[in-house]
Length: 333
Image (tube, rainbow, N blue to C red; front, top):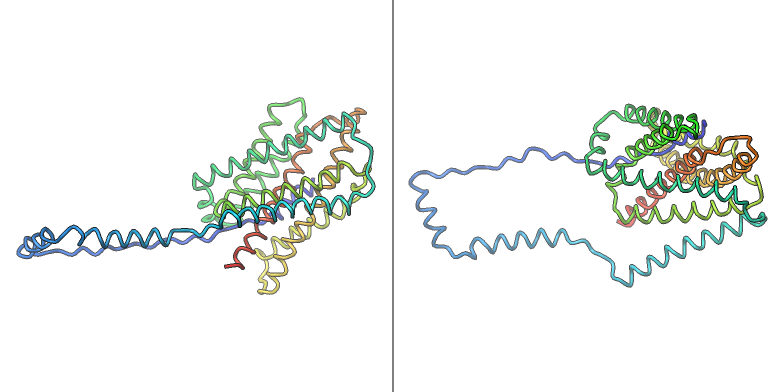
C-alpha cells in the first residue's frame, strides 16, 4: 500500500517551457488628403507582380522554414529493425539471466486470474492515454503549468491515492462503485501525464514500444519462474522506491547545486527504471500467489486491485523511458 503511494511521488513531471508572446503593435501610417489619390493611382498602374511576387517569396520562405527533414524509407526501416532487435534481445537476455529455473505450466485458475488482471491493466492504460490526449487538446496542461507546483502535486496525490484506496477497499461484489473508483484513478493519472503530449509523437511511440517490450519480458519471466521466487523482493523494492521518491522531491525542497541536481536526476531516472522493473516481477508473482489463495477461498478474487500495481509500474517505466529518449534527442541537436 505504501509502495503505491510512494510511486506516485516518484513519478517525475515533465514541464515544457512555454513562452508568452508580448503585444504586437502594428504601425498605422496615414496619408494626407492630397497624397491619397496619388498613392492609389501609383498602385493601380503597377503590374500585379509588384504585389504577388513579394508575397510569393515570403510564403515560400515560410514553407521552406517549416519543412521538417524526414529520414528516407531505408533509414526508417533500419531504425525499426534496430528497435525490434533491441526489444527481442532484451527479452532473450533477461529470460536467460533471470529465469533459469522454470516452473510447471500455470493452472487454469492462475491463468484466468493473471489474464483478468492484465485485461484491467491494458484497459486502464488505454483509458489513461485517451483521457490524457483529450485533456491536452482541451488545454489542461497550460492550466497545470500556470498553477503552483505544490498545489498540483497535492491535488494529484489526493486524487490518485484516494481513488486507489477506493479500488482497494471496495468489495468486488460492489461492481459499480469499484469501477467508478477505477475510472477516477485513471483520470487522475491522465491529468498528470497530459503534459507529455508536448513532446514529439515519435518519442512517445518509441517509449511505448520499449515499455511494452520491457514489461512483457519481465511479466513472462515472473509468470514462468518457480512459485514465489521473486516475492522476497518486496522489502528491498519498497526501500528503493522510497529513495526514488526522496530524490524526486529533493530539488523542490532543497537548494542543490548543479552537480547534486544531476546526481539526484540520475538516481530518480535510472534507479527508478530498475526499481519499477523489479516491481513488475514482484507484482506478477504476487498475482499468481493471490490466485492460489483465492482458489482455496482464503481471499476474495479481485483482479482490478491487482491491475493497479501493474499499471503504476508501466506508467513509471514509460515516463522514465520518455525522459531518456528526450535527453538523447537533445544531445544530438
